[in-house]
Structures are given as structure tokens and as C-alpha cells.
Image (tube, rainbow, N blue to C red; front, side, top):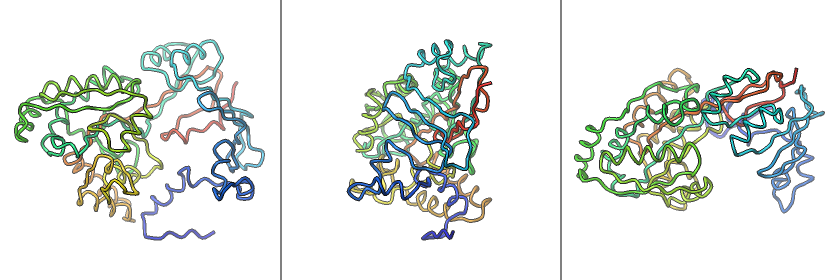
Length: 377
């Protein structure tokens, strides 16, 4: 097989792109047999599968359950014959069903429940750093937030360590760069810490010593609602009144995608394991008009920095891995100082399991966690 690309790119970028969901291999004959109105089988694939992986989809009920069976046509053999996923949005219900033996794995428990599970001899724990980053973004269409000194003041007003220790002590760690830890090009720099005097001086330099008022959209679930209250208190200390606008996550994202926010507290997860996946969205905005095709996070916040953008575009084409790493390190450090993003936290995912379950491990990208090696003793 010959694989041709339109331009020269870094080999690692190309190879990692092939691991994204959109590059999944499917049986063309099966998919096209179920195509309708020229959709290449897209609608059918929403509730069916025709892949080459270790499992095939048996049933899917939105917000209720998913059942997958071992794929007899796959070269990848599985240990479980069937895996059943239950949608249990309440972490307490997960904890209770795990204790009762109704489920074998609980994936989304809160910090206190994780700590309790760690002490329970009936369970065993596993964890892995995730690529998910929580960030605070400032829309550059807001005149006050378009001032570089104001963006810096906000970054210096935030109590990063306090949020981590008091709100998400087990499930997140402080992360202030757009390349997640564990990925090529990641840096350990944490240039910001809470410094009220410095933040106030920057506001004064911007001509806003008296402060100002803005709104912040955020999801009404943990940990966003709790982090939002800390941010509100932090910014109040430097004279910025942060009005909290909570809502369902999909509502917040819809407003954000339409650039209807003033500021927003949200998360971002990578699509493939290469730094360009985040460099692209946090740095590149080639068309800042409302009708733009590439609506990256930079676009959503109406931010264009031609130098940052050009360097991100160059880094994805650099074939020398060491030079490429250096390019991303430099890019992140300048992004700290110039961008409208205050990056806050990186997730660590935990799973509590029954003692008799073996072979399960969490992947750094949520969609890459596999169950084919899992089995009960």
C-alpha cells in the first residue's frame, strides 16, 4: 500500500494522525451497502459497526448503555466475549454498584470516593495521566480582555495550587502549558502563581486599576462549578467582578462555539498523540471572520498572533524530532505570555475495580482505553 500526503509533514505527526478515530478502518462493502442519500454510511455507522477491531457493536442506547461483543472476524483476539457499559452519571451510584458487585469497574468517581476505594480491600485501583486540560479562556472581543496586561494580571491572580489541592486533589494536577505531560514537546514550566500585588500592578498599567466586570460561562457540574467559584474569588481580589453563568455543558459549548461568551471555563482533549493537535487549536487562527471554516479555540476567542501561528505551522512540518521538540518548547513559553488562555489543570483518570478483574488499563486518550485484555479470575 502507498500512502500519499499533500505536503511534507513531520513523520510522527502523520503516523499519529492515523490513530485518530477518523482514520479507523471499516469494511467498505458493508458500510456502502448501508449508505443513504450519498452519506457513505455515516448515519448507519452511528448505531452500528463494521470495523476490524477486537469488538463489534451489539447495541447502543443513548445515555443508557453500550454493549460490545468480540469480533469473530478480527485478527485481534479478545479475552472477554462481551463488555457491557452502563451510563451512571451519579458517582455515588457507581460506588454503590461497585460495592454490591453489580459492576466490575467504576471510572468517574469523585476525589473523596477514590480515596475511600483506595482503602477498601475489595477493590484495586489503576490510574493514568490523561490528555485532558482544563483552561480559562478570554474572548478578545471584550475590550478589557484584549489588553495584554489584563490577560497577564488574570493569570497572576489565579491560585493554581489552591484549586488543585482543595477542589481536585486526586484527579487533576497543575498544568500551565498547552502540550499535555507525557506527549512529545511537553515542558514542566509553571510560570504563574497567585501574586495579587503583581496582578494589581498589571491592571493599573492597563489603565484599569479600578477593575471591571465580565461574565464567565461554565458547566454546572464538578469540578467546573467549584473551580468557577475559586476563580470568582481570586479575580475579586484584584477588582475584577466575575459573574458566573452556569449551564449544561452542551449549552456552554454551543455558546462558546458561537463566540457569544466573554470568558469561559472548559476542557480540551487531544484527538491524536502528537503536539500539533493542541498547537493547532491553541495557536492557529487563519481566518478570524465569523464564517471561518477552521474554528479553533484561538478563533473562538478571536485571538490572532501571526508569529505564534507561523511557528505552530512550521513545527508540524519539521522532520527532525529534537528540533521539533525545541520548537514546541519555545512556542509554549511565548504562549504563556501572549495568549488569552490561562491553562489550569491536567486530568489523571482513575478506575476502581473488583479484585477478581485483571488486564484492564487506562490509556492517556480516553477513546484509546481498551478492554480486550480484561478478564475475571
